[in-house]
Image (cartoon, rainbow over all chains, first blue to last red; front, side):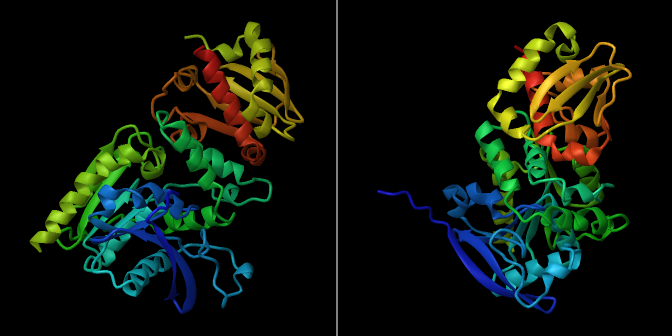
Length: 285
Length: 130
């Protein structure tokens, strides 16, 4: 008998900042909803093992959207997007999560994101603490660093460049089969998306002078960073965790930039206690 | 620890292994560039011609031209070449972000051929630890 995964893919129409988007998402499980946001220049494939993990989906409803312009979420029909340079802004990124949550009638979901998606965890917790019961930021820091974005979308540089970057953003102990899957997935997204998504990270995400405004009693903040991550180091995230009163930081040994994809069993060992804590806190409310 | 890929006595075997590596052969297609790998004060010029490495020169290479260069200290390369490198030395791009390696010259060409270059460096590590 054929193996058929329990994961279901659907399309939902969301109106964000006056434009309608046909958004693809996958989901599996029942229980506390968790929105799992992919990283910049990626798509929901990054979360495929979590979607298929019965230990998780027996207790949580795992929802994995593809941002507009990513994966199966096409650009909108009503916009002449080809005349615009693709650029992800903080306000659009936040509104997307709010509209998705509203459309799926989620009750204060957990938001979990990686890298660009991880940085958004912090912006959501700061600006919409009553919309999410907890956020989990994977690979985050107080602010983005300086960077040249042009090589991420250049006519002389192919998607192989993204393949290589992804490959070496895996810790050296990453199983080869996952390391190669990460690189394959990194090449899937449309060429403009990496540069456009990183705009939010490098240019708009900055919590300088704002960390005292977090209220972790309304929205818990969990931070996870791999010890091999060169973009947001353990020290970078620890600095952030110290600045956000009540936040919790976990160093993930043997992981780098996208733990859930590069070594799912190891990532799960760090994620499970956090989800248990969120579930227990939810019972007390 | 001696860095093997800049040892002139090993050049020939390095070239043979690189040019016969299945992944490298795909990654290096169409590449015609001169790449400088600098280990401390020692330059190693790797000549790519249409996807094949035709020469690795680390003796008297101080005046040889190159298209792009990857520079690191001897200590940085020794860390990079370990079987399990320490963090921020395990990949060139991550190492550049953290200031342990420097990329100079025609960086667009470097990124166009980054797969070939990084596969070459992985093979350097494999041969270093053989």
